[in-house]
Amino acid sequence: MANKQGDKGAHKSASGSPKQLAMPVVAAAVVVALVVGVLLGHFVLGGSALSASFSGKTSVSEGDLDQVIATYTYKGKTENVTVRDAIESQSSLDAVKDSDGNYTLPNADSALAVARNKILAQVASDEGITVSDDELGSYAEQILGSSDISSIASQYGLTEDQAKDVIRQSAAMYKLKQQVCSTDAGTMPEAPAAPAEDDQDAATADYGAYIVGLLGDEWDSSSNTWARTDGPYYEALKDETWTPDSATYAQAQIAYSVAYQQYAQQASSSSTEWTNYVNGILSSASIQIATLGA
Image (tube, rainbow, N blue to C red; front, side, top):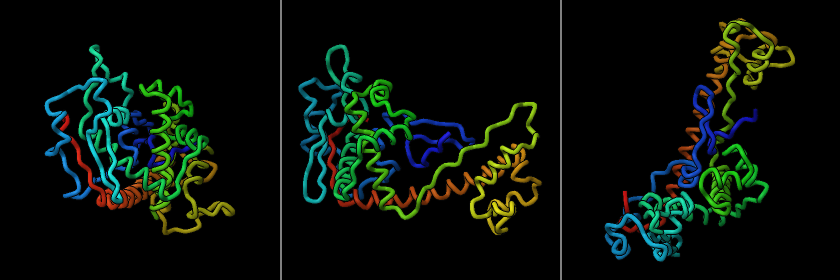
């Protein structure tokens, strides 16, 4: 099975079991990592003419879909976020349409996410970052396990154009992150396959090869011995008896634990670097949002 990239939409728990993010989460968090947000003084919620049209409302009519619920100013240019924009950042219009033909009013978080994502999309564009159709399909396969956009759209209640836009934005943000962050999150290690219940203690060549595949420069493949003894794998396995042709599941788990800890540390450092970068961008923007539902 191909490894998944650590900071994309598909993740695994420490036990190695897959855990997939729902498309609405990907849509709302297309910036890839959580961000603190704009600095105090640049973000205003309510208290303006924007809030008057929506105060006390929980739904809007079709004629209200293009009303402005937020504005943002970045590099001296002010842009609008409409009701339609906020709804379609997380679902299709039909998904929030009630029996009376009205639409659930999006909350402030949805409007803020749209503003953030549009600002970051502009940054990516300014950096010359583009995502081809081939790259879009490959990225969709990596984060959602499928490159069939029609199927993805149907699964998550989106139109095909919405699904393409969400995945393309997320892919662009991933490219931007790779470009601006000096710390590579790396690739999440694949956990060793568990043996049958009655074979837990059996030593196999597969587990031996699995361990060697993780050791990197700590192992000398030409002589089948440790290349150095100052690394984390040696420290974890020095009291274990194993060879590249014979190791147990428990020993493979020890090696996997080391690999996962290293990945987690790298991913955390990369995430912190990305968060600081994003917050630096957003701190120069002003975002004003109407008073909306919680």
